[in-house]
Amino acid sequence: MPALSSLCERMDVSFLHSFGSRARQSAGWINGCQDRGRFETSDVEIGVRSRLSVVWSVADKVRLAQALEDLLGCPRVDLVVPGEADPFLAAEMIRGERLHAEDSYQADEYDLYVLRRAGDLAPLERERQALIPGDPS
Image: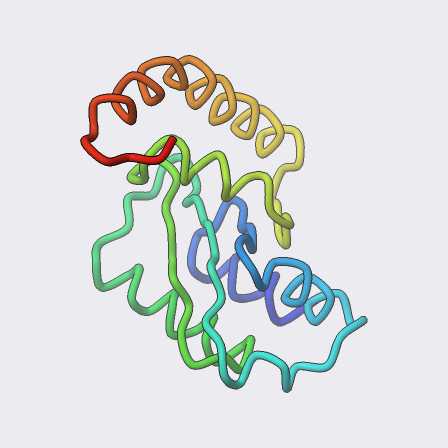
C-alpha cells in the first residue's frame, strides 16, 4: 500500500508487523483484500522497528501511533518496539503479519535474532512461572 510505504519512509521505519487478534484483518486491509470498517471498534497491535541509525523519542512513537490509527481507521494502535519489549512479546510480534520491510533480508535476520533470544530465555521463563504462587502453569 503506497500510503503505508510513504508513512514508513517519512517516520524512518525499517519494518512493521501487525500481530495479535487483528493481525490478519489489518494485513488484509493493507493488501486491499478486506474492508477498513472492521477496525472502527477495536485496537490493533503493531510492532515496529526504526532504521538502524534512528532512535525514536516518545513523541516520535506517539506521532507514529497516531498516523497508523489514521491510516487504519482504528481507535487505537498499541505500538511495540521489539528492542524495548519483553522477548516473548517481541517473538509474538514477529510471528504476526509483516506489513512493511525496507529490506526483507535485514528484517528476516532480525526475526531470527528475536526468536533465538526468546528461545534462549524460555527455560528461565518456565522456572520463573513455576515460582509464582497459584500459577496454573
